[in-house]
Amino acid sequence: MRETPSSVQDLPEEPSGWLDLPDVAERLDVPITKVHQMIRDGALIAVRREGVLRIPAELVAGRNVLKHLPGVLTLLHDAGYNDAEALRWLYTPDTSLPGTPAVALSGDRATEVKRRAQALGF
Image (cartoon, rainbow, N blue to C red; front, side, top):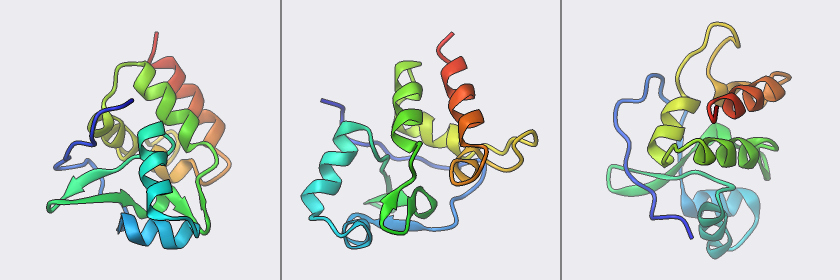
């Protein structure tokens, strides 16, 4: 089992917004215990912001978690990244994408984000 999510400060680029876990549960139409399980399983990433566990809003698209997010998080964790470092990587602007990997995951560049995350392990 993974450790409790840590806090993160000073991201290179801030997410468009933050969602509390009850808000995520409502968006996904699942019990909050399922959201906690998704975080433990590495399908979602959450960090403490202002003392509250939160998830970046763009990682939850409508009623679903971004399709490629769990795979990218697994690749980052396998490369030795903790949750705070993974979140920092997801929100570091990259002019070749363009934008951040987190935003690119919701578009046609998701495969490229996965490829880059996989390369971090080597």
